[in-house]
Length: 89
Image (cartoon, rainbow, N blue to C red):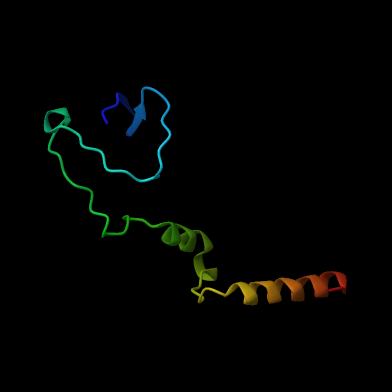
């Protein structure tokens, strides 16, 4: 399938609305459409400044790493919070 798109602010915008089955698709862009040297995106490397790093910088000395909790653990902690706050379960 060939469609028309407009390149605007780093995003390819279709000329007409599309309904796709998948959120991620591969798009072929002709070599002569590149302004400069084409290069492939390296998705194996994390971004230079990750979201986690930004959060840690904001929290400063309060930043700490903890293991992710299971859903049951989260629910139990929430119940204990409500019990302490309202005295009910």
